[in-house]
Length: 346
Image (cartoon, rainbow, N blue to C red; front, side):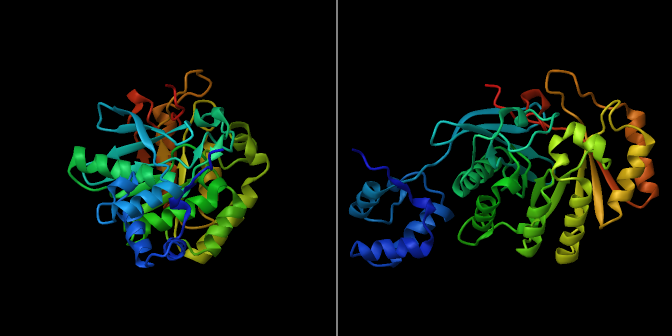
């Protein structure tokens, strides 16, 4: 019977050093291999050119590197790139490169499918199949960094956890991936250039604050009225706005980092003056800003973008209350790469 080999990237550097010692080799070999795995993102043991052939064969006998493969890459007319990423077990997730004049942002996935049930999002219809491992999240970032250098002649500048899945429902793996991304031994990116977007899991927001994370927090809010939010995001019945608000107050008290609220305005759902007034009240519990996001339909027509007058009302009322607001135009709509559209249609 064939023994299932362990993915070598599940080992810490210390575990790698110990492994080499048990094989009668020097511990520093573990450092060399660790650098190949994370600093150079090696796809195979054969890539490790400063390691002897015997050592590479020994590693091959004990371990695998379950590297992702970019199965399909699509380029939008606006420069956005979408990757269909095949995992070692055949499942597929999607990640997106979003270029602007001054920056390149990677939008990465944290789960295959999603743990939550937002009715306006294509990914939530897939249900959660499994969490991504830290190396699978890391590999998405490396692939987009390579594409950024190839197509835009500059390295990746920002990362948002806004792809498929609810990152706080895969908390430990997400944190391990961010540790590798920000480590000098990994990609060396500043945590201040990373934003984790959550639909709002109060217990985990408090845990992030207690863990003194250095990245930014965005909350996919869409309504500050419980009944309306529950109608579009049913899990809100379990994690109501009072609990969410309390966790965000806790976050700000601990981190002093202001919160970004991601917010879509839909026709006939949250486009009234009372909706804006509720949002303004919610924004005042802790320093925050609002990103109004253009809606991207997902075929069935149940949700429609609100008209320009409703959007203008939101902007003017928020600004009158000294709340920073930006209107974010969608990118990559022609290749189903925009917010809420990631669903592996292929």
